[in-house]
Image (tube, rainbow, N blue to C red):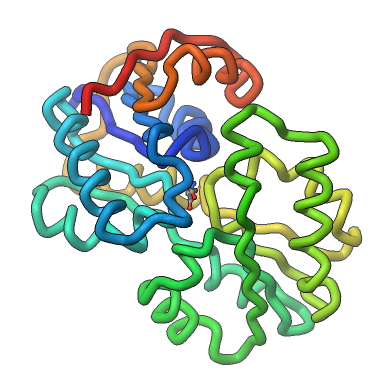
Length: 261
Ligand code: DGL
């Protein structure tokens, strides 16, 4: 089936997932929505995130999406159950990689960098209960990091000060594995590595989500049989601003339209 896949996030963070999907599923056409007028989701009430997610899902489905990817841990925690109840199609979400990290840690101490919304969610509590009983998990909310990535600021004094502050408690606790629990953070990975000793492993979920998407599309016989058309982008914030940071985040430029919802 050659219909597109709809991908969305509170902003540009989901592009870290989009690039994995483009690599693993090059025949799939993609639609991407950045809800930048409402970023950061991490500090917003879950009801508001559910409402925005529903409107964006409807928008993408009206444009022909055959499947949805919530390329946002915070929106997945708040909204995926409701979306799956309302829309009958493959809907793939993201959650911090607690299970792989619990398997990968050698000393049993794992750190999670994520938004306040993700860390406070019932879904995250259930995830810890299911997969992290045998390890110690240190959670660290990271206000401010998402805003830096939204500005295309992947390095510089502000990002470095925030990363220094947020990695310090994880290192003090002895974490040997750090989970990137927000889709904006993989863009900061090169600079984050500077604040972590070489033995600390960093895990994120973008590639696993692309694999899961492939499995779900194959199961429902919906994998594309044609060549992909160029990805279409919308932003509820300033489309020109998003367009100007696409080359930094994705390595190529594209037009961005204003999201009409
Ligand atoms: N990129 C999002 C996530 O994965 C949310 C960031 C935000 O808007 O706070 O959690």
